[in-house]
Length: 270
Length: 275
Image (cartoon, rainbow over all chains, first blue to last red; front, side):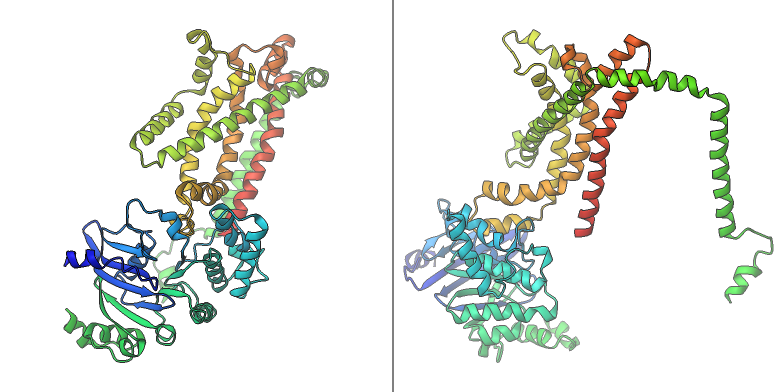
């Protein structure tokens, strides 16, 4: 098998923006990912769903190497980020990342959050950086809040600034790590709306989420993960609408109807 | 039901809690009044004022070089603080380094300089030219004081700064790295500014301690132009056999330290509010 893998990767196809081969990740004795293979194409929106602890966030964090994989290879635009000689910092500028807890820089204004990497990493001058930052704040509907400090903004606004910050680097693709999980229910919509806009504009996205409605409407492909492997994947209508795997069905039943407690489920899965 | 447990069980008469608190308070005021009366009876006020606060000595002290001594104390303190801050930051980064020997060195340094009296460090530093004949510390005596006191305060500050750096959430580094910032840039641009915001109040407290510790420079054998407040006050007090100059020197320290402590309280209140 390894011989075949060596021959086929990287595909060299420019449309294959992310290629993940045989990805493993353990924390000590705990195996979180046990062999993930995944190719994400240009302009594709992939939603990753699954129970907590299934490894979906770890998968995302391996893609931009915030977690160092234990085994396996990852290619970004056909360049291997897991290569020890890879210019990881440059490859990271191609991927915007949005975190569950926003992780905005509290000592900088919303605009400065967007410009700090432009001036420091991309070496733009202050005026150019400002223009790019303002453009992206406008894009997320916060053009008038550039001078606000993050803690003065609502959770939804903070997450939108975080999206603007990631977009300011003009990335090829975006990684969303449960972007709405830390938000009050009434603030989730404004963030999802921004993400939907991005998807409509053709941005390549991997979204780890619990928002089934969003996955169903926006995703081109839904991936259900459990126990560190991809259990089922396909169009949302199939994976969410008509899942083949029992594990997927059990998970969806719990997510879509949290008040429904099926005692039988527990006995079956034990 | 509650009436039974409250009254029925203990028939003995007992003071209500409020009554008891009132009596304690009266007793405390009583002790205070007693102390004041005793002090007034046994202390000769005029004699005390004559020794501690003689008006003509006050005038003399202030007119003779007090401004220079005041300036020197501030200069010694400020310089030592800058040295301590730079050294403390380097030591803090060493303590968080991936490289084991850096961590050990920084820990040994901190434990040594925190465990040894600052007076001895300063004395040893004053005698350093004996050991290294070619050594000439520039800006004498300021250079000697700045390095001597700075080395000691760096040890204290490094612990504070390390705690401040560790108080910055890990997600901050991750966000910075995900934007393509190299590790050093992320530390300088994202982590350190936040860490210093966190540690400004404790570092200002350190500045207050340092202001008082600058009085240790008297062991260095200074010329009159290099006198700090303490040495200056002590000198005049010896000459005139009167404590007034020392009292003036002490009050001068308060002019520096009280605003700083006030500032710390303000900053701490603001940080508490923003959480």
